[in-house]
Length: 77
Image (cartoon, rainbow, N blue to C red):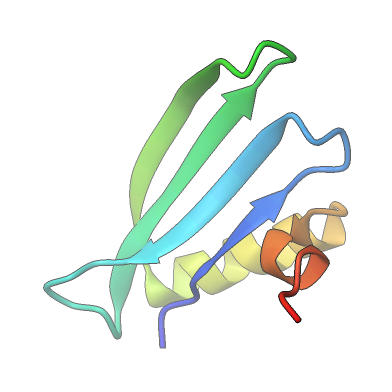
């Protein structure tokens, strides 16, 4: 299954979002990178289509680099 989630870097200025493709949710999707500054201005760095295998590899690399899943940090009671 294609990974989903929102991950943030250690400096909290860049976010990577993994989302499934609506037409082929099991095998393809997109990764988007957004940059934030202190004035709440968002900037899309890039958006790319990835296969399931490439997305899993990218997710592993981000985890090794210290990126964290945002949903894990902000659990709702």
